[in-house]
Image 1 (cartoon, rainbow, N blue to C red):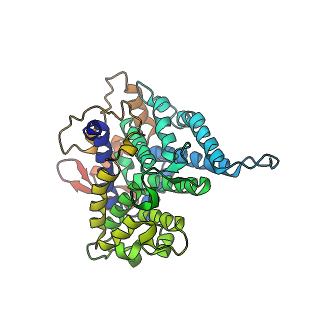
Image 2: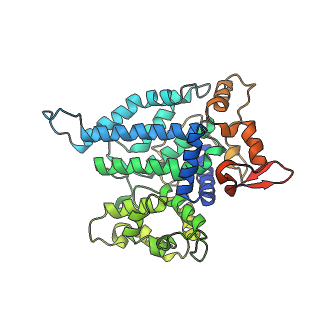
Length: 390
């Protein structure tokens, strides 16, 4: 654990979680993010996000197929949940590489991580077939999967607004279906939700609280008249009906709805999810967010049960971190330089097929403040410096 706490891998996870936490505060509206995503789809400039969503869609279809069993073969014996989950993971292990090869139809770098580590992180993102559990370590594996895509230039700064409210939101939907259909339990050390909040998710609550902090002010008000039931932790956390109604708008509400549904009828929140109940004592969402960030470092990244299940590679190194304090997320992303023959293929493909947001033309449009369909609302142009600040 001493080496882990000083490793590049831990630093990469923390800087990614912090960075996306800040991003979702700026892009707090899930509905607006989805509308912008669909507009980009119509203009053919959403390749990166579409590919990740396609991967999640196929994984979701595999989960449903393995859960329902082969159609028209009723004479076969009914399999247990453990057997069906084992078949689902077997398909994920056997066909995950093919899925990523088909989705990212070009090399991902000199070691071709698309065929080596990306399938491993994707497989580990959907539970453990041996122990029949799901927990924050699997959620962490999906975060590492996203970090790897950023490092391979398969996700870029233009895709930031869609990471939490579109991609991660869809991941939570698939995971929730897997947990319910295959009856997965919480991972080791997280029984009854007294560790890691609900026992299943943590980053979802963390980023979800940041989304709500960006939506509501210090007094619980919102400039666009958003729902008062989600204005404060005391109002939102114990209200199962409100969380169910607004699960598609707020990531936090989606995670809370799952926690309420997994509890037995009539069991109070303070009993089945004590740490979630404790959040009701905090007055504002920004306070909740700050507490969850601190807790994530200690209760997830500081646990040996989590770290021992991680996989490391050149994109997620266990070596000692020598970066200076205050390193930003894009400082850890390798620069794509065409002069390097071992990564030139990746660089060329990123500029060719990922979307038009990375082109010089749209860069000039952004500098002039002429984004289409009112997208200038999220940007501030810094005069004479050519910088774009969210």
